[in-house]
Image 1: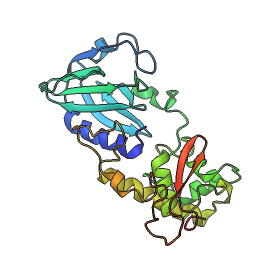
Image 2: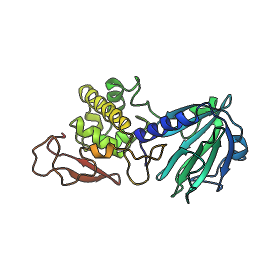
Image 3: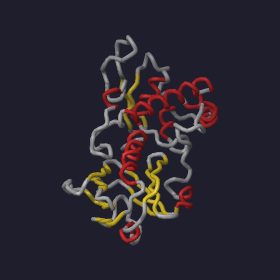
Image 4: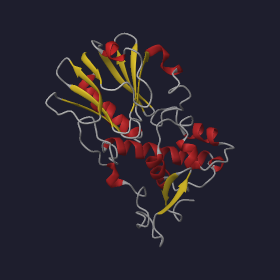
Length: 275
């Protein structure tokens, strides 16, 4: 599933093509993705003026007209591209928006785990998918004091705590593994043992890895592409994720990168470096 860097990269690419434009035609080629589309969605989108594009966690929010909002989640296999009408339709192009300058925005989702919803902008904070999300990890509200407070007393592993979207929004398996490696913290360490000092170190590592991943266009793993159809490149800079048995980049341990399973997900780490 695309994580914060991939969603932010897509948002930026779409904004260049969509902001200020008008939707002249909206095609919904099936009645649903993960859930049914809102009633009369194609009619609501047709003729709508596009404003700013924002991101909240792993969701893209597209402002429409004066007070409307299109909420979008890529799901497990979704991709959104913005190109010209000459590009051929693909098998799983389920939502196609044609803009007033000829740009065609395609939402392709082979496994149909994506989400599309239409709501009032003023209702966004109360939407079931957005309400309760924690702070954005790249914004000022996410710092060592906040994280140490939220983790205090928690007996779950720090890896699981960071994947809890109520604690911090947008993090996923790849970037949590990478951030914990940079912060020299074991993914098995209990969250409640992350005091202020470790929390400051962890926040810095999270910010650094997310910034670098966004700059590289995200990580292309399976289906993900940027809005212009190009791949991301941060997967070539992973220190531990997907590198089971390989030498640790900054360590002379004999075992190399280890892989364990936590809550049904693969975790990659160095048992010597990360404590």
